[in-house]
Amino acid sequence: MNHPEISGYLISEEEIKQRLASIFVDSIVLQADYRIKVVSKNLEDLLEYTSAELHDKSIDFISTHNDFKKVIERELRKGFFEDVSLELTTRSNLNLRVSLSGFYLGLISDINGYIIIKIKISEDTAFLQRELYKKTRELDAFIYRTAHDLRGPLATVKGLINLIKIRKDDTEINDLVKLIEVHADKLDERLFKLLYLADTDATPHPPRGCVDFSHLKDALRSTLANNCELDSISLRITAPQKEVWGLNEFLVTAFANNLLLYVLSLPITNKNEIQTVFSIKDNHLEIKMKASGFAVNPQVRKAIERPSFIYNDMLSYPLLVNYYAAQKVAMHLHCLLKIEFFNDYDQLISALIPIQRESQLPLL
View (spheres, rainbow, N blue to C red):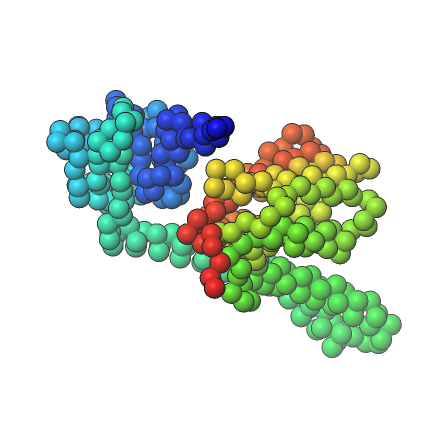
């Protein structure tokens, strides 16, 4: 009898090592010398560091405790420990009270040389107050900027209305009305963009638990058709043939649409092409959108490369409203979004969206 070749279905030890952070959520994986190997995604967000930035650094790097390493070493003498209270330090120098549990990976597997540190956030009122204060300041800054930006065209309109009231004759009435219309349109446009950004991630109905890529491709082609001349831009889309469960179809579609609209908002040259590839890799939906022939000036690069409060950024760079809308949706999708500029006309947008495996099957 012919036996099937099963070696291709086996997961190698090296693959498991690479995926330890996905297997042990809310965890930091340490090497035997207490240097950081990898950090799970949600802890990256919490600590404000990426795994790449923390890789090979001592565990002391992210703690206010001067001998954090010695504490773990002492607690691990029996092989594991639970509920040890310590403080971690974020990139922005916030002290975060956490409860730690840890064990040698070799206790539960044949993989030796690694330590798993599970992290649970303690209810730290001071930390929450600092976060609330930070968000409040962001909101205050946004309100100030909004009032300033919207008051400009409004003040102009009021000034023009006063000119109409005190006019000696009607010789300039048409010009004054046109000016009022221009500034009213400017005010309306800014309000529309703020409303669009606020509403971009609102789901009008319960979202589907999967993405049908035929629907997604149709949505992108419709967006292209409604926003430019079809013969001026080439859009090529590659995607899986089957539906993928564990993804919010509404948010994924909104995310991809806003990325496309961001590209279409840029000045174009003679040769324009957008290549978009959707693929499944390591329990993630990977999106790569390569745009060629769309001009990106230094101001656009600066706006994209500076992390700030999304609404303030939109007021500073209103032409990038769709990019900021995509950023906002990315937060809901727990998505990694990156743009790489090759030159003034070519860029690659990359995104990695985690697939929720517990939602893989539809509800009957």
